[in-house]
Image 1 (spheres, helix red, strand yellow):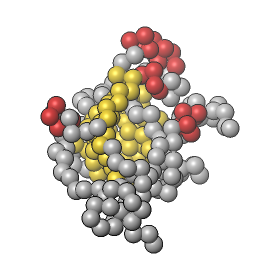
Image 2 (tube, helix red, strand yellow; image 1 turned 30 degrees about the vertical axis):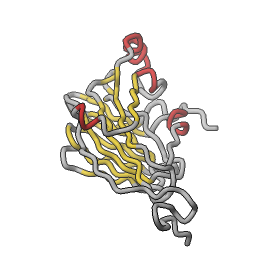
Image 3 (spheres, rainbow, N blue to C red; image 1 turned 60 degrees about the vertical axis):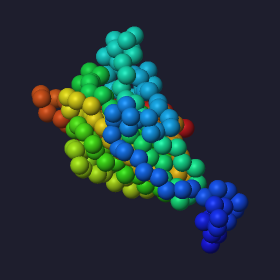
Image 4 (cartoon, helix red, strand yellow; image 1 turned 135 degrees about the vertical axis):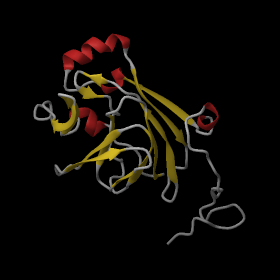
Length: 208
């Protein structure tokens, strides 16, 4: 096995060795300045993902902000941990709750953790083989995403859903598989209840 740690600030392959650091986890302006990148995702970024197309089309002109992602950049290599914060806003398109784009990892055999700082929601997960799972988010609750599972965060509450996440630096993101046909399940509100139901658009999806 190659020793990447090396000595005197250099790794075994000649690159600089990462140094330890600390970071306050929160969403105050001072805390968010500790992250390197900031991404806004608006409704238009989730074209084709919501089941109620008519409701989507009516909301699209205002293009509301669905969520923001703050990330601490790390080298994209095994051994590092990329991490950051997602702020997912409350709302619905038709009866379907606001959600993130969702993704697999480009390196499918990598896992991820999510820790809920504020709000209520679900982490919807599925595999290529057709298995699926949904775990609840509430403050202080951690959800572990096993390798090979796609995952999508959903805000089912009336306030911001704020999540801390971490995953291997070499994991990457594969959004294309989800953009093509979404998830097998969707999360909706019916008669005041939160339900996980079949995605009516799934069967009509075109498979490459």
